[in-house]
Amino acid sequence: MREECGKMERVEMSIWECCELLNETVDESDPDLDEPQIQHLLQTAEAIRKDYPDEGWLHLTALIHDLGKVLLHPAFGELPQWAMYFQENPDNKNPAYNTKYGIYSEGCGLHNVLMSWGHDDYMCGAYMHLMNEEDIENLKWLKIFK
Image (cartoon, rainbow, N blue to C red; front, side, top):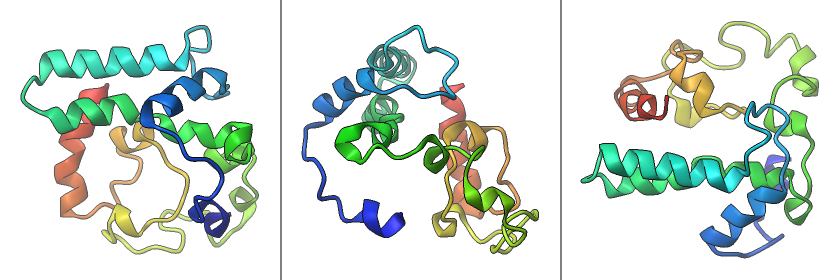
C-alpha cells in the first residue's frame, strides 16, 4: 500500500480543492460527523491564527492538518478505513507489531516509524517511547491543537 500511495499519480488539485473534497469524505472516527470537514479546518486555522499571529507556518499547518483523510475518497483510491485507523488493519493481529516497540527501538524518532498514527495519538503521548529529542520539542506545537 505504501508503494501504491507513494506514486502520487491519482489526482492533482490545489490545497483548497482538496479541502473542499473533504466534505465528501466520511471519517468514521471523527466525533464531529454533523459538521462539514472544511468547517473544522477553517475554525482550527482561524483559532490558531488568532492565538499565534506571528506563526504563519502554524496557520497553514492548522488548515491542512486533516487533509490525509482524502485518501478515503474515491478520487484517491478509496482506501479502507483500516488503512487510516487501527481497528480493522490486518497488522493489528500480527504479534511482531503488537509489543510496546513493535519492530522499532526506543527513541528511534517518529520520522522512522511507518504506521498509521494521528495527531491525537501524538498529543496524548502514545508514542513517547519512540520519540527522539526533536519529536519531544515539536510536541509543544502539536499540543496547541487541543
